[in-house]
Image (cartoon, rainbow, N blue to C red; front, side):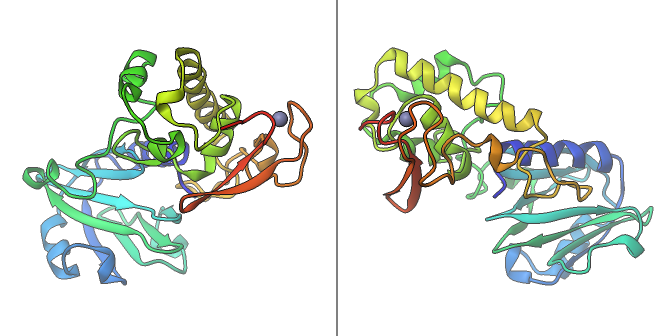
Length: 272
Ligand SMILES: [Zn+2]
């Protein structure tokens, strides 16, 4: 599952490797992952130089010098892999981009991904990405900002944080430990949280995501060069550790249903 640390790393590797390269061709083996047919995609990007690669929440935006933008979502996960020349390209992919110097990259979506083309004029109103909030790695994501964001909300905390319109980039995978570290039950109502709990939660979000980033991000996912990260399940506190002892109190970790997601919690440390 690619969440903020993985996406930020991938976007930065793509930026370092691809900026300045000239688009030569785009192959879409699964046309429904795009918003336009392959031949139109191809026509609008060929000859354009890559100007910038950045992320917006869990989306990657490849900015081209000709006023076009490629928007990529990995969905449940994907292998997005660079190749120096076609001989080294991955065997399986739904999307392939080739550059004029013979290099390129492929994307193989595990479940369903998106690869859209949007002009500069359409970018601001693009329905998938327009409402995504700033993410915790953004310098504007301060404790003040976060407290203001939560003010007056009556939603359950996990559902609130999972909503990309509130906070960009966090998904279910890192959520278990984020809430555990802040000693919060996923179904705790925001209006029942005090200042101290909000501060603990803010620090927990930053700490957990930063730790993953420091360790090279999630270990079961490949980066742009096919390397796995170093953030193994050993670093998880309660996430995916059902029936194992809580690292703080020793109580058995349980999994509970929270809306459409599963949550791993310590029932003693995280009370509703
Ligand atoms: Zn506990």
